[in-house]
Length: 309
Image 1 (cartoon, one colour):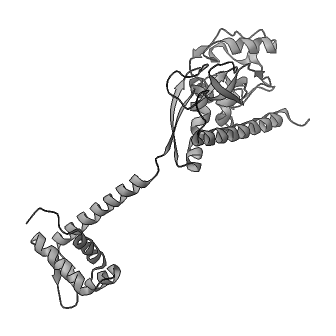
Image 2: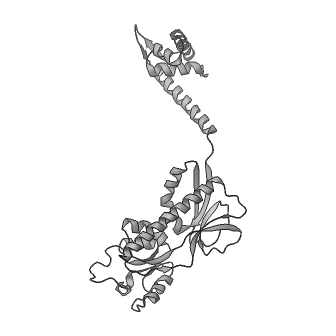
C-alpha cells in the first residue's frame, strides 16, 4: 500500500459514507450525484490498495480497514478546523496582578471564578507578597496594596478599609452563662497573627488586665490563625477582609462586641506611566462592585449583632 497522502476530497466523501452508511445518503449530504460518490470511493480504494466497503445488493458495509481510515480522516480534519479556529480567535487579555497575600488568598481568589465567567476573554496571572505595603518592583499591570496611600510613582484609589476583632469557633465559649470576657481565654488558647500587637491593643481597649497578651502562640499567616480558631484551638484576631467567608458560613463568630479600626486600608493601584487598558478597567470596576457588596455584608452583620436600636 502506498504511503502518499490520498485525495483529500475523497477522504471527505469517505467520512460521509461511513457516517451515513449509504452512498445515496452521502451524495445527498454532499449535494453531488451517487455516481460521483461511487467514483471517489473507488479511486480511494485504488490509491489505498484495499477495499473500504463490502458491497451487497441493496446495502454496503464498511470494512474494518475502511473504518480506521474514516476515523483517522475525521480526526485529522477536526484537528485542522480547530487549529484554524484558534488562529483566528482573538488572544485573551492578560492581567498581571500583584497583591497582598491575605487579601488575595482569603478574599479575592474565591471570587475570581465569577469575574472570569463574566469576562471569558481575560486571564489573570497572580503574584502575592505577605504584608504587601509597597508597589511591586517587577512587571505588573495592577496591584492591591495594604497601606496608607502614601506611595509615589503609581496611581492608587481606596478599595476597602478594615476593622479587627477577636474570632472563635461558634461553640468555643459554650457553657458560660454570661457573655464571654477576654479573661475567659486560657493562656494556651491565645493565637497571634504575626505579632502580639492586636491582642495588646484589645487588652488595653477592654481594660481587662487578667489577659496576658504575651501568652499563646504566633503564626505568620492569617490563614493558619483562622483555621486554628475555626477548629477550636483557641481565639485569634481576625478582620473583615480575611474572615468574611468564614463568618458567612458560620465557621467563625465574633464573641466580643469590641472592634478596633486600623490606620491602613486596601488600595487598588496601577503604574503611573501605564494607560489603564480595557481589561484592567473591567477588572477594577468588578473589584469595586465586589468591595461594595463586602461592605454591605458587614454593615448588615454588625447591625444584626448590635440588636434593636
